[in-house]
Image (cartoon, rainbow, N blue to C red; front, side, top):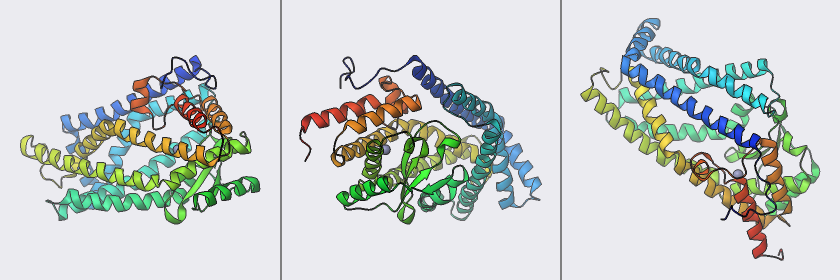
Length: 384
Ligand SMILES: [Zn+2]
């Protein structure tokens, strides 16, 4: 693709958009670095052992309760280290006029997010050390299988339990749009159980849409910031794209890829745990939960290394969903104008630098998506 002579349908990026995205990338990297540093310090200084002793004292030496206290203290430390950057991100969104969330509402979201993280992390870590204690040889394989089940369950519950903690959703009441979706679905020989209006405007000025859930919670969610500002044809193009994800079974494929990466992750974690136990003697046993920062460090580093590959997989799926949309809608004009509106509204970079797109972007650059649409239309001048 040649960006030297961009299509006339693609306006160039404003300095504001470039600046905003540059800041966001640095904040993301700083956040990642701070988390990594915390884990390294805990391990190198042996403070993780002090924390473990404290947790066991607090729980009168009950192992299970001790794990919970340890996780709570670790998350609290993580929050203390990261809260400054979280606040800075909040200020950045306000500064670029992308957010209308008040400070109190933001603080409340932080509290809810922390509690939700604590509940999920406790379940996961209790399960992890229970299995390590029962099956010290095969723990990594058993935990992997258990995590997979948990992951599928969470994917199913997310739209009905997790998302509503932060946002309100209501079934879409626009008859015209519903009729368009039914027509699109019939053409695809499939059905999505529901389309929901996602009240994003309470917190953000950005627009968004997504396919979420599994089985009977599978649904398309459309932000009110999109529904209220885009033409029916533009919304139809977005719906067609989300339907493309459904038709190509992208959520299922995503879980399968996640399963494979996690299996590799557990294998490496087991190796790292045994290596440190044998050579460094900073933990007493495999079941000593003071080694949790080591497991977290391994998974954080692996996720970071896997990011470009996972993003490439995601961009492949997005291109597939786009092509599905091109085939389903009667003209690509609304798709292109919707893309441009999204870029404008979300202050996205239409043409990010190559390495930025390669490493950070889960979606193809908007300029590429528009060019694909134009190429698709040029190859098929008459719509069948
Ligand atoms: Zn998509």
